[in-house]
Length: 459
Image (cartoon, rainbow, N blue to C red; front, side, top):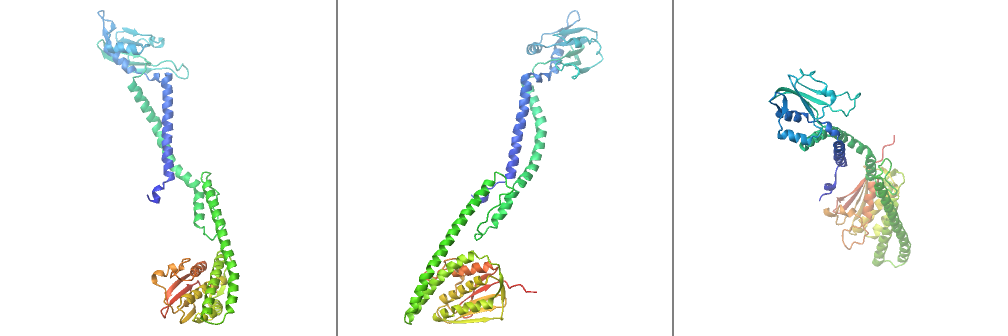
């Protein structure tokens, strides 16, 4: 599974889950209200007068005396059983009337006042009269007894199907518009809220991307972060502190080890100098020099990591002369000639002179070690702030030219070098905004070119 397969959009998930929660809560609220109204009988105001009128219309007839009467149909009997308080009044155009049930006095006194009305709903003023008084439905229909006017009011319960339909339509009518409105508001507001709440996380991520392993003490800011995310930033800061502590212990160990090595190496050199001249003495002096170089490189690592000196103008020609003077005896003892030339008398860059001297020293020492103990090692300072160190050895294979700058990498397994010098050169070049590269020498050897940015011109 790919790494990105585990990622998800918090804004999208939060929006959909909020909408789902709103839908459940709103639907539950409406159903609860409707259920309470149904249980309390309040929904009985939803009358089914049309059914009563239809049943009475089918059952109305005239008896032998021509008076209005009811035929006991199955629907009428069923209606009487379902609605204990059923009442209705029937009146024809001749003034004959038929009553069943307890007709409210207010409706019984209407008489023939509404004979010219075909249908109507009669009710009360809710603010002045009791809201418990039932309204009535009046409708003129044709029946077996002729054209009659039927008035009724029923508070019987609706059928299950009709009640379910009414409740469903009520839920949809009341919840759907509100849900759509809340969903739109959620999809608009949630990304804005999340983006605003997580603005601090973007800042913390930007700070984390700028952390370099050499910058001890770097911490992520916990300002303007949600409380839910603050523990993560705190944990990251604690991890950074542990890394700083471990790196500091490692640095102290390297520095202490290098310092401890310098004293016995100095004693060894003193004793070697007292030996009679000969090939064996030269070999031992070279081995001792490599030990001293390793100790210095370990100290260089510490000094380089702690290098916080402000850059100044550095004359590369002067740097090259100093390094050539220091390493000339070693190069001559190893069988080389050491040559120094410069394109101009002064070539300046902006940097740390001590660090640049260490970088050039490592390049020359590398040439002494791998130059085949023959020919000339040339130091050339170019006018474009470059320094070339060229030997006449076997050169560097193409497939090795990038790896030789890795720490502790050696061209040959039995190479007695420490593998730290070229890595140090690359890091110092990067510190100064430059780079180091490997070229072919004019006589088949290797040419290491240290390229640095020229110093800005002084007005």
